[in-house]
Image (cartoon, rainbow, N blue to C red):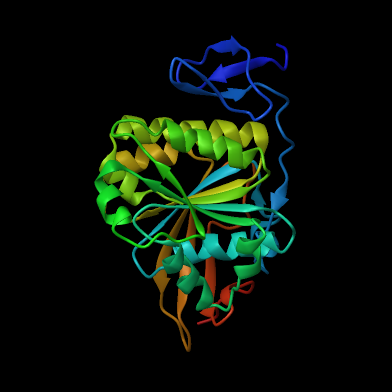
Length: 281
């Protein structure tokens, strides 16, 4: 197979042609170039203690589903990881729909994570995916120059797949809040999007977080999504002694065998801090 062949992720067939950008559309299907798979590495996401408790870290070239009840800091985990790799000169794209970039920035400012200079130089990009149901609300809101925008058609997430590939070819890690899109599109469109996300990550690299709250969507649909992604981290409340605490249940982790399945963490003013010692009593 030559470098000019590409994968149709929905049909599994290869087609000739393509472009250097990594995006190709034939029959309205986005294509991922068939090329040498990027080497899988290990990352601690800049979270001290992850290396110790996992016996290495999390595999790169992977898509992770982060889920939890509201207030369990599952989105904070992604924001902290992306902020940390940003300091290592890795670019970031953060996809939003119902939330605004200002909402995310306020959450991050809680932990003193200032990414204003990275937004200015383009290292961190907010991209707002707007389905038709949100269009009127977004149009009535003053435009935020910190946000790029993708207007999505009623029954297709193809523009989002195309944008993800373009950002992936820039070497960006990503996060996407998927909840509103799950309410706006069929489960077939959503699972096609995730399969495309995973296939592209395996080919082109990076770490990509999918954020979905617990208890909002059909359990069967969530379980199917869990089958598709490379890792599933479920965030829970934990009884703390003197500070806010939580647990991360590693429900699934491809390519490595973790030393433990539950990671305990404390919530401090600089973010999540992983516990590296066992509790007594």
